[in-house]
Image (tube, rainbow, N blue to C red; front, side):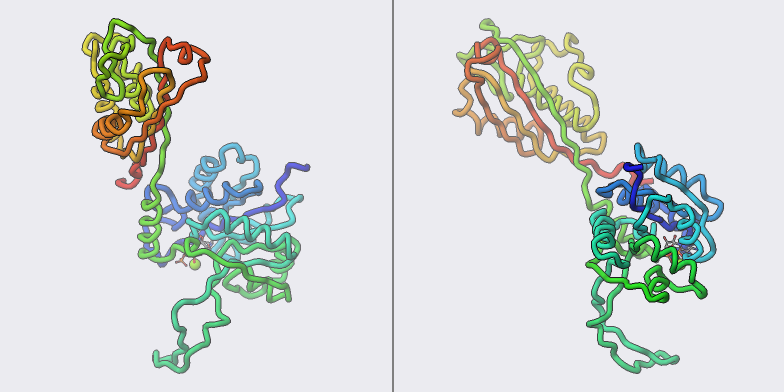
Length: 393
Ligand code: CTP
Ligand code: MG
């Protein structure tokens, strides 16, 4: 019992979305390539404490909602259920409420239509309900001046907006209070807080968040699209390369020739910086590694310069919709003395990558093959941004 969730989140997604004027139910409409319900659930499943999640699906679309919910839940799918909703939001919440597990003592009701609600808002509401033992609703001050008008649209008066708040979801309650409010409900009210106050329950507000706006009109949908696309998806990559010294070869490192220094063994020119950077870029883009792509003993790469591999990795990453943000590499070894040519090496690598590069060098206190001067090791990282691959559906 102890690992059963104490909190339930009812995600109401059963509405038709009349004002959105889309072909199907609102929760299944895409924002940047993913359904509104999926965006909403992503936020719910990132909550600090695992919660029981009840998705209230559009009538007749239970299977679609179930598929989305399972995909979002991952390992947490034991605590996910999907029910069909009703004609009114209140009816839909009631359908969800009927499925709350025994051990749950705090219930959050959340609109799927508030698809971009930050997870912190869900956590904050759950925390505040536990702390204060009352209903809790996130709310924002009203920015516009509010007027009361007559039936013929003439202004009658200005309403003092100071005590006014626009409320959002999730709305959270001690479970017994919400159950009692729904049991007592006679007439339809517009939100859960209204039902709770109707039976004399206390509901307090906490600060809401602009991102928790409700997708209601086509304009809201566009705003959500822009917000999702504006957040770049970042990918990190890692690459390591090791080469032994070979006194009979010339040293090529970071795209530079180092006269008088022992070279590095290898089928290509042995430029371990270029190779590690190539691997870092490929791994960030999920494109495998240098050995898999170029073949370590392919004759066309015999003595190939490092920039051949770097350019090919950049070209492939770019073709897959990535842009390189920055690259770092650290050379581990006793030779060459790197500091004197760092600027030159960084600008050479920056030319290859078309992005800022920072290069450093270190020794290993005489330990290991690098300490004994048998070879060098290079570790590189790359940071890439992904263009949303889902944008152009
Ligand atoms: N909702 C629901 N069941 C209903 C009506 C609404 O589960 N019968 C849900 C919606 O899916 C939405 C939330 O309640 O997540 C807020 O409702 P609203 O934004 O009004 O959505 P819709 O009712 O779908 O939109 P509209 O009023 O434009 O038809
Ligand atoms: Mg509605």
